[in-house]
Length: 484
Length: 96
Image 1: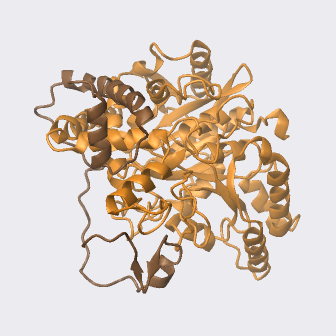
Image 2: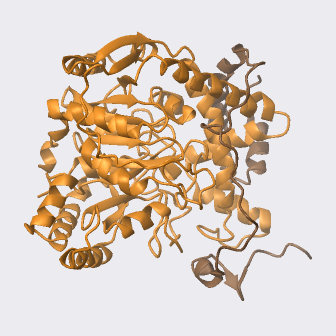
Image 3: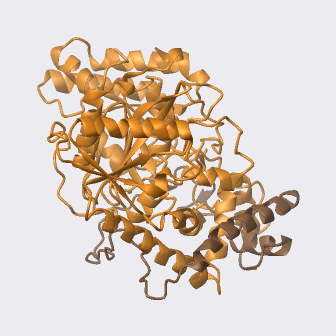
């Protein structure tokens, strides 16, 4: 049962092969018996899950089943869930029981989905390895000595290990695509503003975007059909029509123009990963696509630009964690400053502190123009590169990450090297474009992700391109040996 | 751009109201200086004619009528707060 996709499970539910309650029990059992090895969940909600499953079965019996009715899902612990702990991977929010639901959670509830629990993540989504979580690191199901990537590491690991059919993730600089690549699953970061950010704990507001993490492109399309849409509660939500993302999955690849940025295949990319990516692109050529080399000349500015913009916005967003209204509060504060300083000092981990400090510095008097405004200008140069490239090609392809999953602890003392592992994903967030990572092969039994980058609001096209690859290959069907 | 030293880190940490252990300050100073070194690359790019990009789709902030749309949900919102009394958040005495 756990090797079926959402599409297959929906067919099984419709045919009456099993009920949502049976399906939900099966996944809860797998989580209980297997997640000890992975640590991919922070919170499991069996009572709620079974109650939602029962309700979904009743709706189906009454002929009122909606698109994702009765399908169990895992939610990244960055989404506020009413009356359920929403920790964001931080000690700061360990005591936080959310008084409301994020729009994404509401939408899944309305669609009849079942929530199994909340997945582990880097603290406040700041990290590329899931090692900054206060709840401990997540292990990669393909090799328990390696990281699952981050920040949506728990979501990626749980989907890869078949502990849930699918999960949600969020992506500020690669946090859906890089873990999808490391864990061998399909991850989609939609266009900025496509999915509501309401109730999704903010890291960097001009970059954050939620998306599906699934085993197939078809499932990602089904998930995005639920998640996408305008939300008046999110002031950056975009009022753009939502197509049926499953409608064009079968369009032919004949004549598709693929651009390969030469900067994405330069020094720094692991040779064996490059070979897997090249073989994947050949697969598209066999399907009739036309490949050309393109240039994104300002690519090298992405990481430095990001490490001003993201920390600046994070330092502002995280100022709300002050020990006064919610979350962790220190014992016996002497005065108001002591309350702020100690609550925040005790509540945040080292990586979050680094980013708050950098952001505070960049935004401080006298430095604002030199850092933040400068980075907003180089951001435009990076974005213009893509606009230029999309005059010639339909889709950009390349690696999602420079290597396969690295070892636990390998870079945890070396923040800069860790930052560079997001070198191919960050520019997409700066430009607000949709991007995907899909399983494209293996190096030493570890998965490699092919990244697809499209024009703004071209999610349907990206899903079509990904789906066609998955009709020709079976990389997405490989299961980690420990979790068969 | 100058590297950050111990007193810089202390000053920034205070601006951010962020407690940092004394023994960790040298490491933060090194980390932050390295990040600023990385960022220095941007200085070599001429951006005089470039308009800053604050929104990836260059959208402007949407406005709405100034009407009350949320219901008063105070008790629910305060249910899990660290310290409350009579609908107020409690903090140490600010005014003597």
